Length: 395
Image (cartoon, one colour):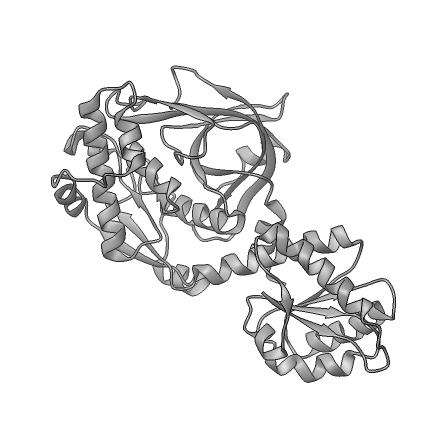
């Protein structure tokens, strides 16, 4: 990623350039990308226009560059050389021109964290443009709040929804083929009914072919129909695809899939779609559970049957304890629930879906209970709450 470096002609100190590059090197390491200076036109092509104001006397330089800065402008300031005063003048001018801009100031660590937050949000939003998501079948009958306006979704995020019939999925499943990959071979070696695993892998193979056929970044499937149609479940296939970086969701829940994509693109982490099972107000804790999760997310896992039906193949995994993000947006993206949290225990209870976590929430669980965003929630490892807020920030 390129940033624009501004320094007035009256200041010839090359140490200022080194300080700027040190800051962006630190941010780049956290983001997993190289960050180097570039021209105004190069910076204007980025998802967010980072402008480092090294000295005073630079407002005119910023004004001259503004026509090339197409995206939101972020002014990075330092505590010397009249950088802050020049930045505040520049910020005012940019907003007067009707453009979005903000100013970052503070310690280097604070500024780096803010840069990472804004870049993650902007890169995620850009990555959604032109994305295709599949809906295989209709939402499950019990999901009565999941209607999505496809036209509005494309206008808001640039995401296109492709509708695929269950009949087409079943046709693919009946081909009974799947990749001969190390992951599949490892699953077949597990101590579980081999025939059931092979059938579950045939479902995985069918999902994989539909993803390739329609050019999908992800999909959600009316998975409970598979219990009667093919006498197995999609849990294992979804687990494999999520581990491969394909967003794969349950029960035809399109809002959850969209939330999964947003969280996944912001965090760079794989995402667990799960049901809230119970809440403990005293401990501010929530138990989440589901029968599938990205196969590379748990530290260890075993194969089990699907909870509600007692058939097929599901995943019972132990997710690493520690910091997580809990997130879910409403179907119209008008509001969302978001909290940092901490997994404090992996559970193994027989009356819940197979993978179970007890999670201590940062936000009050009373807010969670009244969040009005539906049934499923999305969990990833690490705290990305500020970047998600930035993603939805209209300023």
